[in-house]
Image (tube, rainbow, N blue to C red; front, side, top):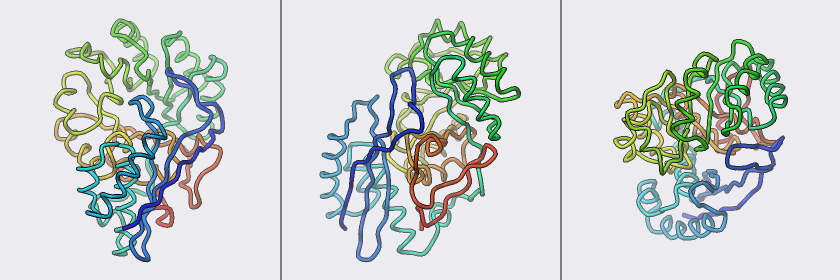
Length: 328
């Protein structure tokens, strides 16, 4: 089985700002796994918050080439490729390859019931209040009823109030991207709950979230950077009420589905997210999204351009992917 991969930079339509910094493009790798006449594709991002770089992903793809030669299976990739993003690209490429070999859809192979569309949020990045309000008004006019607001520690309440006035009736997810401490979280929870915030995502740094043990506020807290695989669930159970599954973090569709089912059994709510994926990365994530309570799969809509046979959005919903894109 042959492996081809390439590094790409996909520009955002506007500079994308979160608490950790700003980006003008998304760093992505595409992998093709070829077996005879059949070729499967997968995509992954570079998780800089975990110390990943494009060079280390390239090295991991080179090492994975030997794994695919000796044991071309998703289980072998999971066991022998340490980089989670590379595992994601290869796991999804192997699913795509299996769909093409067998003629079966990804829904038939995974046993997940397809949905023609899922409701998604729209992300508003950190900017001056006037810009965030204008972005929120535009998203609401396009039919989005859930807005995900990136936040730092500056004027959290004031920004949400302004965005709420710009998008009346909308519900909000606030994503701090590890920028807060426990005191900040405790101080904003009550006012945010009155402003329509339904979820707070990763308020504390993932290496210091033990401070959340036993904390209960009026808004559920969602683990993002803190949740990377099934083994994390036991540790997170008394700190969070929801988890954010991103295929780059967990290593692909296969462990993503495993994590979703295990989290459900533990009574945790599910969010399905992604980084700066194109539709090629969003398509396998969509499979898990059909099981989720919150879906943050708007990254293709934030890019300046997208893949052929791109996924489409309408009235705050993401429509199911075309099998020419991925999965058959």
